[in-house]
Image (tube, rainbow, N blue to C red; front, side, top):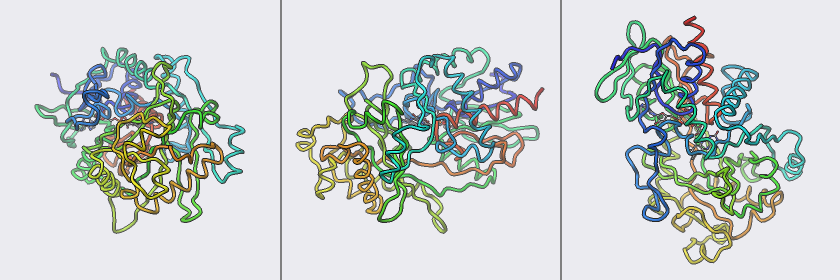
Length: 459
Ligand SMILES: Cc1cc2nc3c(=O)[nH]c(=O)nc-3n(C[C@H](O)[C@H](O)[C@H](O)COP(=O)(O)OP(=O)(O)OC[C@H]3O[C@@H](n4cnc5c(N)ncnc54)[C@H](O)[C@@H]3O)c2cc1C
């Protein structure tokens, strides 16, 4: 191949895709390449079929996390337009600019297959008042719910529009990034390529590799946060008042005992609980479909507690991984427990799960989460379940299922300036891999932001 490009993008998740898309729109003459360790969209297939393969078999490249569309491809496609959560892009680009970029991303989604999907809003809702009255806080956001199926169509349409303008190299993990006299050189297994501008957008799955790049180039990093908790699954009707108007309520609770913050995360009305494989560690997540025929009778959401570490401990992700490994060691993967069993201090077994009124949507090992999660975190989660029970009666039902562990790993924060550029001119780090974003909308917006800068510099 002719291996000289104006711009090389590493990673074809939302950050990388929106960088490539915006470069194509703003400056069609620039020669752009995208290197992605995973497969093209249509070849991404998780082998779990619920019959022959019921749990994660640890594929060398996880189709859920890698490939065109990144970790977002089979996600629920919830694009939150807000500065309240999903990342801290606003700290770099300013609040108004961040919202403008997220709205722009929404417009692109709407013209690529997302048209007709609903935009939910929490502003001024009656439910907000009910939360406050019960010591809960509902965060403000507009939420576009594409659904896993429409999210896929949007990605497919964007790829089709880009494929004749942008060169995509799939199954080509970049091994090294080097500074050259006039730009950057990237190495892969059987060759290398060079460019003037390099955008690194490797997401969570690329976080360990990102650290090696920063070490090699002496770019400062910091890793201080990890979120730990469980995924809650209950009959959809219990949360219907919340989900029908808001789709997803981001609710925060401050515990009485430790004054820790526990929050709901990634709510999936009529959705399914799924395994997630991050670097060989199996954790839990959830998704849902816009297509009614694929919907379930349950709603799931995570309850997470943030842990922030300070000196001398510098690797918060290792802490999260150790706890996830512990659950994998005891349960061979994800553990499921009835809330009633947790409260009574006993392990769930298959019989009690089968006799329960909530039918699990994920095959997980019945077990005891109190042997896995630190007491302080578990106490906070239990307190919040009772608080939620006041606004959504039935949440604290004995049969409510808790899957564990859910870990939200935060990438270390890479030192970048207000342009999301490292101390090396022309080397940008964006999306979840930069530590600046933790969501589809923020990651995509960060891609648009740097693409516009590069286009501008080349006019
Ligand atoms: C099951 C699930 C559901 C989710 N649901 C939502 C949701 O509803 N709403 C929301 O806002 N967020 C959701 N998220 C999070 C969201 O998907 C991420 O925030 C988003 O994808 C981040 O985009 P990104 O481009 O920064 O990184 P990613 O999407 O992680 O993409 C990074 C890409 O880089 C590739 N890569 C890594 N290393 C290399 C390398 N060395 N060389 C080449 N390529 C490399 C990876 O294969 C990957 O494809 C969900 C995540 C999961 C896993």
